[in-house]
Image 1 (cartoon, rainbow, N blue to C red):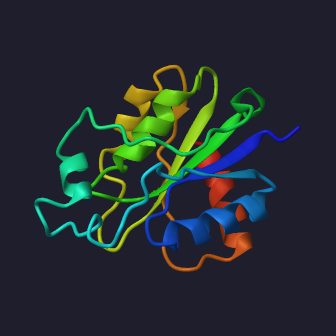
Image 2: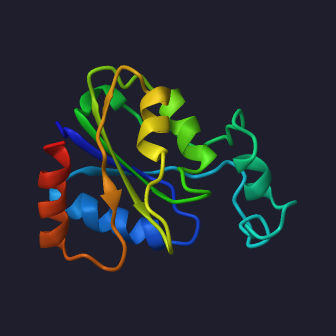
Length: 160
């Protein structure tokens, strides 16, 4: 029985690559958070005030639908949640994911990829969305960290 899950949302493939490597380095199961309605290039244009992502991120209550679900969340003790940083926090679809499951007693470790910012208030927001979980600080996993570096990062991250 697996005790770790790497769940991730990736808009461009960058977070997906890191998530796959992280899962392989730690022996964790892997789950992709796939939007029911895929994002187009125009949707991802953060400079366009009318783009889908801009509208979603400006609406705290927005919860984009997810195409599938984790079969048995109860089996996991630690869930690594990966995402690209949007507007200094996690994308709203990650909020959908966090509200869809009971994370009571679980440890959540956020990890993100970003072209220019840190996790911002994502860990605090995630704690509010999963109040019965222990949400750790997590961190950025930019570039192409080796599997050994990822395994070391996991050890540090789980220590809080």
